Image (cartoon, rainbow, N blue to C red; front, side):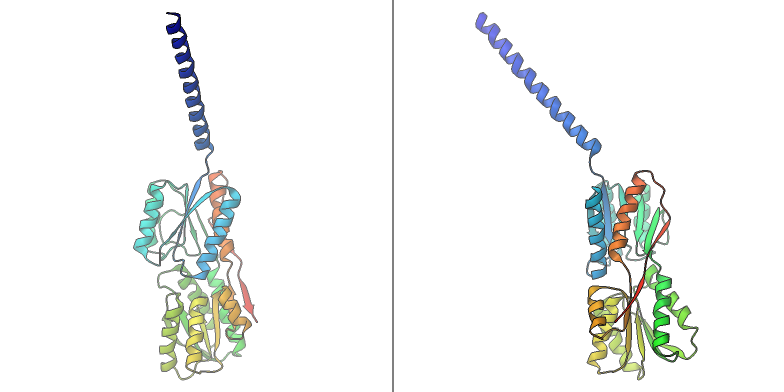
Length: 307
């Protein structure tokens, strides 16, 4: 009988210790979840472009600094994949969605999906033509287009033939850069835009489109490409055709473009700060989640870079 009592007391003690340990572990988990790091989703139009890779890097650095988990998705310049990426992030219950749209119209459905789940949305570099967006962070693309036009006009002494390579139709960046450039160049009646064609912000397309334009246009004095990738493609086409003296101006300020300027192959670029745009996206998400007021539009400074 005495042995049974001792055994009973021993079992009771062991059970009590196990229960206390279990409760202790549960409390630790609850504390971690309550405090736990919040998650930001970042959907990029394409990571096959150095500009957007730098934007991603800027966002990742700021997320690490502020203690956020950042999930990055690549839309590969495909609006349907972009929507799928957003839906995946919604399933993962992100606290804020940062999105760099493939297309300003097509992205609206993705943004509305996030809106329906009460997930705040911030657009980066390219704006959206609908849906509820709490903040847009981008360079002043209209101003950048104007800067490119003024540089070319000055370099050509107000007279010459110009080619314009446009970005992806439907994107705010292509629309705004084109608007700024066209309106500014129109102030110079002796400068003519002899060709204007989309090359989708892509280097290989910039090459092929420029090859066709060179065959059709015997006299070209300057090229304005709405991003550096197209500008670099255009330079390759110009070199292959052995056409001398054509000024090429890009937009973005990528490493490859800066090297081309240094080597005298590109005349200038309108340099954006993609790392800053990505960093500001995370910073504004952080402020919003803390209940702080943020502006609807936050501009990132532009710079004209020449040799």
